[in-house]
Length: 429
Image (cartoon, rainbow, N blue to C red):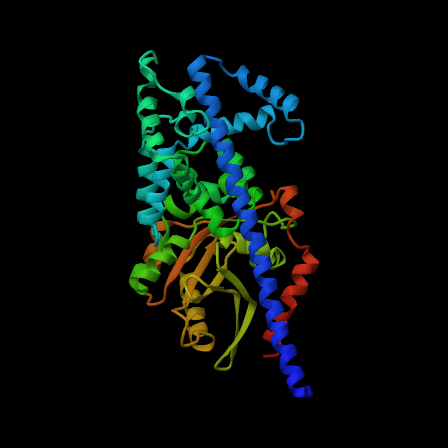
């Protein structure tokens, strides 16, 4: 075999190995995801089983303590069945009866392209729904005779009896499919406990679950977003922008959906009365937290991006790129409340970025003005007449980064090293 043929064979073999390795890694991810979903389904069934027998026999809450003790005695090698965890399993089952999971799936289908209005409508619809608790009799396939509903069953079990009959017709496999298809099966148990501890209405629980899956949040990040009331900041608060008049309908809806008001940035080491440059410097140092707050699919492009226009030099505070919007985002930071002239300055930078950076496959550049407060009426008047898309939001500075989240973030040195390549490219294009 010639050297040329040998090199070709090695190239083919290397590609083959890479393909096999990729499949192994993907299989590991699939196995982990599948194992998590099956564990959640198991916990949901256990919770339903406990709730059913509590009501059927009037055992009360003490049964959980006794059950935890019995499991330790008979199955000492099994973990995850403490009194606390069994209590959470009951809460889990009670919070998400079967018909609630079916409603989640239906809501998923109607929100294939989310907008402020559609999300609000669906969340409120879920919040208003009342579900009769469907207990473990729904899902027990081990011993049907022990779960049969007879004429002696009290009146309050009539609905459960109807459900039991339907479930036996439906079958445990079909129930499992409903559970695994719903968003409830796609986040981990710690995140589920976080949502349960927050006592959210059903619609909000659904929304935070969906966001957690889409954004890849850890349970710590999920708790931060719930504590900071992300739903209100992104969905229910009135937001000031001119997107509907400056962007085509699909993009304007998505841009409005992604915009938050206020933004909350967790910045350790920021001065109490920070100026724009100090805030900007801290945002870059904590770029991971910053992009987390901006939302899914935002990439950092540059800080203090230099543009020469005519004989003058200009520096845009921050430039991001939004993958969902396929557009550059120019961010201007102001350490003072909104003033109408700020919109003019941002409009100028949008024009420059459109001319200097925007490619033929990029959508219209969007401007985001972050201020320390605003008069919404003044801000809305200030946007009238501009052809460029601009959003105006408040921002708040918080130094309350949980210790357990800090450990998951890269160090400032690592972030600065990562950003150095961006800054060097800016200086030496």
